[in-house]
Length: 109
Image 1 (tube, helix red, strand yellow):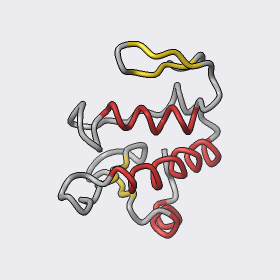
Image 2 (cartoon, helix red, strand yellow):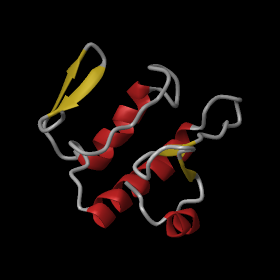
Image 3 (tube, helix red, strand yellow):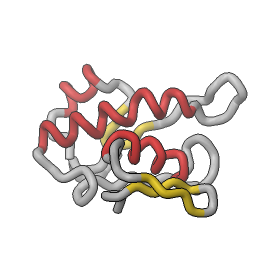
């Protein structure tokens, strides 16, 4: 989705264009935190502005048009934690309900 890689590198140096992949694929390598695990605080700080910038620059629907892939489900860089960060970024005010330890909000997809 990001077309201007030089500008992206300047604003988000942690976002890298995919090797041999069209301009709509970018990678963020999550650094290790102090305990040697993926750094959840880094994810919380970096992911929301990257999503917001993609939405602003390309006029896309963040829920329909952006897909985030992670190779695991659990852990700081797993899909469960990514979904929590995305929920706070994209749907912070929906009515909340908890089911089996997971929070869902009206408007979540």
